[in-house]
Figure 1 (cartoon, helix red, strand yellow):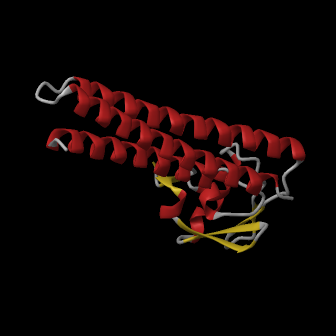
Figure 2 (cartoon, one colour):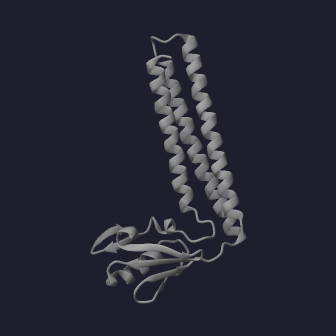
Length: 185
């Protein structure tokens, strides 16, 4: 196979892998009823005048399936962390015991589960768009090759389509698993 075509296929595969890894990160942030430190990954805390990620000013743990504990490295940060969690719009009600912030994760209602499934489907669709964009870019580059025969171009486009189908199936499988996880009571 032509070296340029193989390079184009590798580049599109890498781009599609990026869409999958982005989807995995997005799915980690969608909570499925049990507590996870990733739920607080987007929270920024005012640390001596600058916005700092929570994970850089405190240790975030899950002692059990319904509780998240946030142990700040500096005791005077407890109020700032509590305020940042309250202002984050995650729907959590943090409790401060003086040394650490404790968050009880409420069980999900049926309505909230359905909303989370919709959110997961939207993330999966974004990943599919990323895969299709990689396919479109690869096909454009293949068509632009001047030294390749028409048969070689057609075969390369078929390979790109096979990659696209494979990654779309992976995304659907991830979505199905996440949907089951969210809807499980």
